[in-house]
Image (cartoon, rainbow, N blue to C red; front, side, top):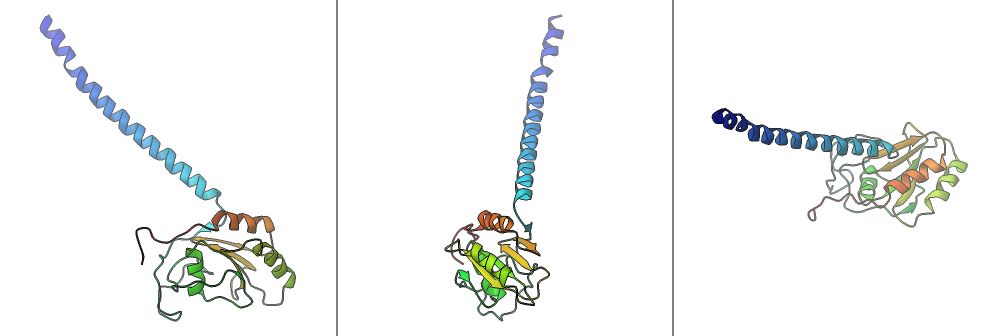
Length: 185
């Protein structure tokens, strides 16, 4: 009888170790699932639509060949090594220039008015002028909406002025730097 008691006790420590290991893996998987779910909910609650990043390579000139932008107006990708001045612009800004402003933590508020729209421009201007830097207002012809809000990898399009929506977008993304980590490029 003593031999049977000894044999019965031997498998238990291995079973306990295996069970503990499985529980640790299950807990790790559950924690990862919770983190993933939290990030998913957080990203979904942010204003605008996410657009995949095209990177942030510098161009030598605005007319240099590069990959086509994946949104219109662009939200990331190849750009000039300098930025457009912050504030209100009367003329459109080259895509290759505006993308660097986005990388610098800027938000662009652009409008498309084939016919004059002074009330819309005045409303947008009053919002943009609340911010000293990192926000630009400029015309942008040919887009499929009257207003486009862009930040690095984010875009929101509107057909009429919604001040709360514009301000929410600016507040969410203004000042978020998107330069690559680890040095100069």
